[in-house]
Image 1 (cartoon, rainbow, N blue to C red):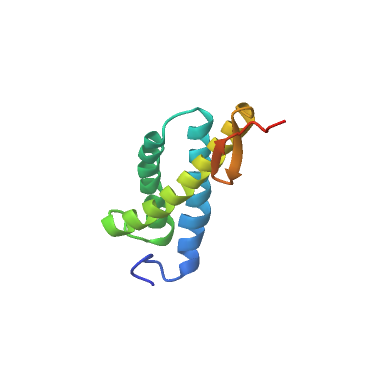
Image 2 (cartoon, one colour):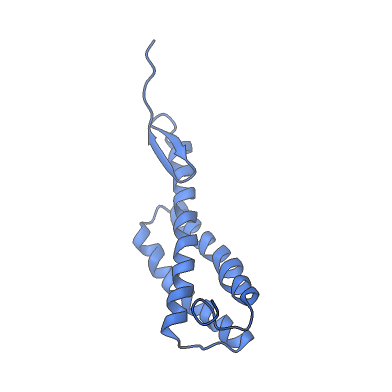
Length: 119
């Protein structure tokens, strides 16, 4: 997988920078966008910028390629995944706690309309 997903000599460097550090930052970015009730498309703009910072960390600390479209795309796809899950998880919590009379949790990332019980 070296050369396809990452260019460093070890997958652990990719996991540390992109998955752990970048993923946590992307999750928190998704959470912040959801908490301020902004739309999902704004999150994607922020993640595109975050992808540049993750590429810079690879370049500055581990001698990765700074301006590599392929590795930027790979990093950004992982970041978008973490960010969208963080966004949906936070939005689900918001909808089911602030509007508990209207919605109930249907899963960790979704909600549904609450049905009035008969009786």
